[in-house]
Figure 1: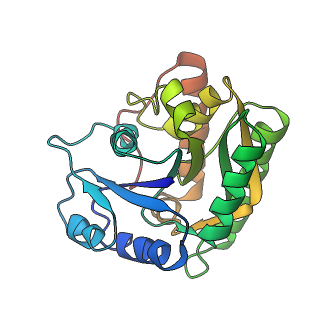
Figure 2: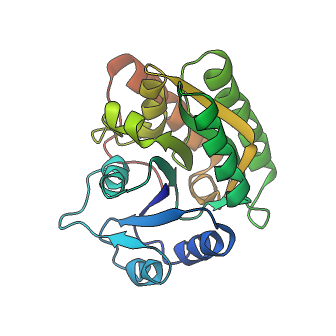
Length: 239
């Protein structure tokens, strides 16, 4: 079974569409876990109409990494899928069938990520340029260099491998996603599959601006790689 884990915080604007799309298109055995972070809007109520489980902690999580880990702890599937509240997995049945076949064919394969883009109604020229570059980087780092790299918007991971490395580092305010794939690449093979397409709202880049966001991402990637910790104390923009 596949366990799809979606972290949320005040996502009533997006979460219903994302969950309804999954429920309509996905026929493979699965469960959908919404790991909420004490939203103050109607996220929990909206999610409850579609998700198999909505988890709300007693105390708000410090990082989104902790929020994702909380959802993973409740998962019953052998394969964990991490995505975000505004992400739309294109043809989820085909994507997950391909993922399952890949895991079965290669026991050394521990995690998969795919091609990212922005939903057509929100996409800008800047989005197309940046994600073209991102997808190349993800291909090279996973499939050629074996270093492991993936955005939190789309990660498919063997649960036993996720547990083996201890899940997401909850002390990281940002780059917890790439850090997880980097650690997973130390125990097995990570893979980028361009046939697996995930589109999202692009709202963070649109709110913050690509120049500032790319600067923060690059600096944080360097900081985590060199110093082993995040430089910032609070992440830029929204989830």
